Length: 305
Image 1 (cartoon, one colour):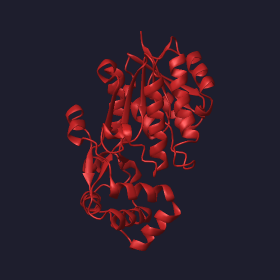
Image 2: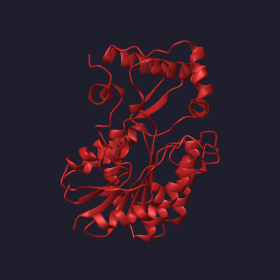
Image 3: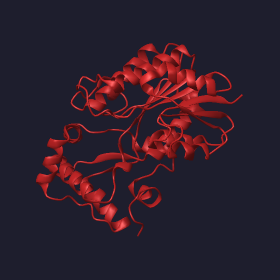
């Protein structure tokens, strides 16, 4: 019998990447959760494969979400892919809507007898260090640490996997904002490298965790495909796409850090501590894991050379 998986963020980059990996896989039925089942993103989902069922629901009401998913499924809910959008507000202690949503998803999954729960978190300094490191200076890091702890404490007999991606390649795009971001990075962290990953590869690992749930049970892993300093990153973008995203005036980077405090805190953390995912371990499990050049050529909105 096909295993029913609730996929949150189904029209977003991470949920969509998981759906792409499991589309038309007869072993799974994907219950794609969206807040607007008649929107363009939902309509596109419906056309992707016969094993996708689009359900309108909201993580602010997880009991109703699970009820709607159960109504759409032909059997019990076997798996859950849980991803929450950083809310951009709430105290650095990690309280707020994101924690409420993430913890409620765990609680409802346990009540529903879900067999395997995959949570998309964030890397915080290594697979073991991340357990003890909430990084309270970066609010959306702290929220995800809180949800991780809730999952680990309350899962009971439910299997779980935690994926901890680093910075997303998808946050890079041609244009002046990229130059401002690079200025903020350059003035804060200098030549220190930052790790990056494609959301497409997050989808690969989420699918792997469901396909090989026994092997991935109680496993938490950082996900990264490349490690680059600002100059290396900008050089690669120029050489691959002929696009200039080299840092603009340093003071504009300072303005960005001041005006968008969350970005400022995160870049400061990059310089003080930084991501420490095992890139080589990721590539051993997924040889096609994208580095920056591969992502620029295959997935990005940058012009092709």
